[in-house]
Each structure stands twice: as structure tokens, then as C-alpha cells.
Amino acid sequence: MKKIFSIALLLLLCVSLVIPSAASPDLVVDDANLLSDAEESSLRSKLGEITERLKCTVAVVTVNDLDGKTARAFADDYYDYNGYGYGEGYDGVLLLISMSDRDWYITTYGLCIDAISDYDRESLSDEFLSYLSSGAYAEAFNIFADGCDELITDALDTTHYPLSFAWIPISLVAGFIIALISVESMKRKLTTVQLGTEANNYVREGSMSMKTVKDIFLYRNVSKTAKPKETSSSGSSTHVSSSGRTHGGGGGKF
Image 1 (cartoon, rainbow, N blue to C red):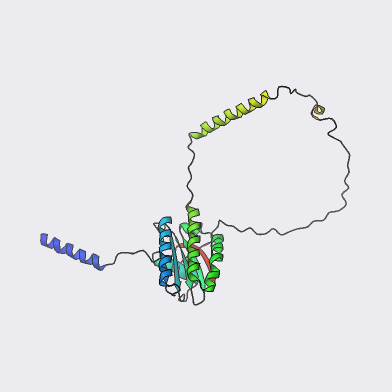
Image 2 (cartoon, rainbow, N blue to C red; image 1 turned 90 degrees about the vertical axis):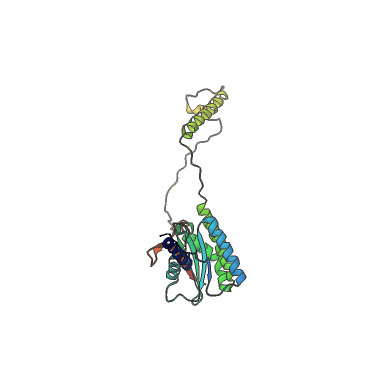
């Protein structure tokens, strides 16, 4: 019996060695070979630090073509089917670059949908698109990383210290005491003031001059100006990917 148990344990050990353990997806996938080895290593290090610090995946993927998909579908599917996303909420953001049609797309998921709104995404892309267009890919990706770092940090910076209910009556009493002291102090300074029974008592002599003026309304001009549409900086448009997940994001050409 002991021998059989030892054999079974040995077989389990062999199987565990053969089956690879699940690994975190690469934060920099440069299939289009846009980066040098040094640039890729530096970017991967930066994205890894941001991802671990914010508990939110930030990744960059470059490809030669989209395999017949739209940039949005490709980015969403790449994110969903390759294990991207941090924690149980799979929070994260991924920048996709396709060289065949010069497409770029940012897909967001989980917390990052709200952290990177449509307005934020457009502002961020305005900062790195000129670098993409000129072929300065490392600079563009680093700007993207820094922008995501700032936006997600702002979204996570919601540390508030709620006021305990016990402080509410204390605050009310303190406020009442302060107000009472202020009123009493003001009353002491008004010892020479006497109540006036007529309105004239409150008018300084020579300070007012009443005149009768008549305005005759002849015609009017009415001008109308279209009210400019407001740009929301807090909303994020969403869509459902082929996996059934809800993503945010957007993209364009470079």
C-alpha cells in the first residue's frame, strides 16, 4: 500500500512538471517590431511597476494586421482571450497598434472604464499621436503609460475620512456657542443705537434725491445665439465584446 502511494505521488509530481503554470500576460507585445530590445525592456519595466502599484493592468500590443477584424474587436478580444486584467475585476487598459492600416485603439475594462473617460482618452491620444505618426514609438508608448498612471491614480485617490455621527451634535453645539458669543459681542458694541419708528430715521440727510423718470418702450431687437454643446469629461461610452464583456474605449488612425 505504501509503495502504491509513493508511485501515485511520483506520478502527480511528474504531471505537475509537465503542465505549465498559468503566467501573467506580457505587458508589452511587440509583434510589429517597433521597439528596440532596450526600449521594450524599459517599457515593460515601467508598465509592470504601474500595474503592480495601481493594481490595474496597463499594456501595449503592436501587430502587423488585424486578421480581418476591426481595431476595436481585435483589441477587446486580445484583452479578453489572453488573460489581461488585474484581480477579480480584471481591471485594465490596453493600447493596440496595427501597422497595416495604421490603426490605434485603447480598450478599457473594469475600473479603467470610469478611470479613463472618453474625454480623458481623447486628451491622452492627442499627446501621443504625433509621436506615433512620426515613428517615435517608444516616446508614444511612454506618454501613454504616464497618462494612464495619472488618470488611474486620480480615480483611485478617493480616500475620504467620513465624519462620525457622534461629531454631528458636537459640531452643532459648538457652532451655536460660537454664534451666540458673536451676537453678544456685537450687541455690546451697539449701546448708543436707538430703535427708529420711521423710515426717515434711517436716511442720512442729503444722501438721497428722488426723481421721476419715464421710459417709453418703442420697439425691441431680439438676437439669438446657439448654445454650444457641452463636452462631458466624466462619461465613458461602452460596448460588449465577442466574449460578452463590457468594454470602454476608442481609437482612430495615426
